[in-house]
Image 1 (cartoon, rainbow, N blue to C red):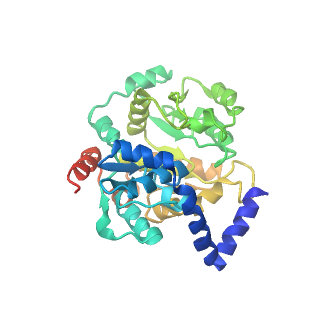
Image 2 (cartoon, rainbow, N blue to C red; image 1 turned 90 degrees about the vertical axis):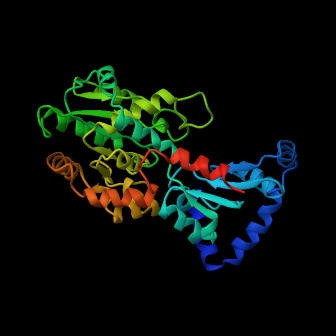
Image 3 (cartoon, rainbow, N blue to C red; image 1 turned 120 degrees about the horizontal axis):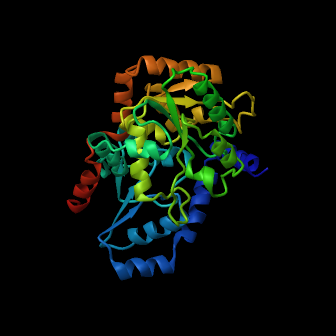
Length: 360
């Protein structure tokens, strides 16, 4: 019932904007924290950078920073969906770092930020893909997965069951197609569970034995190595390098609409999104179909950043099409990448650093 009640509240807010104004005024008094104020006064930082401002704790710190005359507050988001899908930011900042033109426009559209307060710098954690392309080291990882390093492979990046409830069945069906040589006698597949497949409240541990059963000489399961962290998606640095190497040298990235879409485009790898529920017809609100209506995914799809499959038969056909024509929609994919992350030069970390140290 909870999401239905919240959806009703949302509809009321759309009809009566005064409700939002009243709520935000009430919310502001809860953002004032003596602990946050004392911390910021004690540290007296030149910069305070929030990466997930929808978090109430981060917004408390942002508010404290905004009240400290010698501190410049900044928002630099970790993911492309934070503005349109993660809720309203309780506290804003003085300056903003955007991934690319799309994120800059979203800051302007949703929060009325002045364009001169937004700097486009790319995505520092995608710089790793540039390094992976220039220093190929993927064969050792392929061997570790029990696959043949001299044969091509598909990369399937899974999502939490919350977003794609029947994805495990799709992976199983693809495994059958692969072993029936639907994609040729040499093709292999690497399946990468999302960290939220493995742990946390969005996981479904019943998937793990099913994945293990799929492991053969042609299908490798690459389980993520997670840090001991309260963030369920926090990965070990070595595992990030492995993920990048495996992705960069794959023939095609298949997923249900995760950030891997942008990762793959950064690696110059085409993307195929499985927007269906295997052989089931789930209610829209539980179905993987609904992801295609998320604003960030809809924008990328409209630019030609990925191709959508609507059934297992369609998925198999589209995989075959990409294998025969890997440069399909190449110019559209390049344009989509520029709009999302501005540059694919591997210099985003430097751009962010230069912006910070030159900011007055």
